[in-house]
Image 1 (spheres, rainbow, N blue to C red):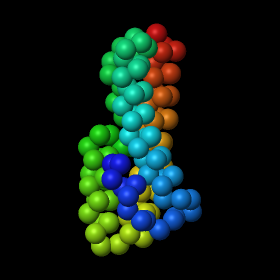
Image 2 (image 1 turned 60 degrees about the vertical axis):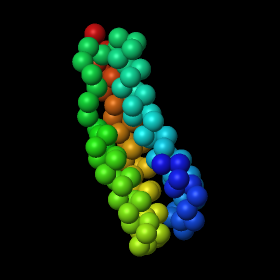
Image 3 (image 1 turned 30 degrees about the horizontal axis):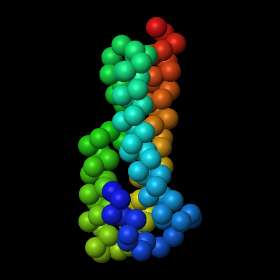
Length: 104
């Protein structure tokens, strides 16, 4: 994932470096929300759900790397889409944890 910082992607709405940082943040926080909720006994069952599960995130990362060989413009758009969906997944899991905590 950090190797994407070294590719000279064209900017798409914002700086591509910022999009890559948001993808990395979303990938890490999705896992952290799940682990923190389980550790602090906020949830009874493991949190699942969200638009981008681990498998989908890895497939998108693989596709970004693959398309980077052919078109940097389309790869920059895919990075932005992945960033938006990964942040949305973090928010989904956070609200799932809050709802389960409120029930307990």
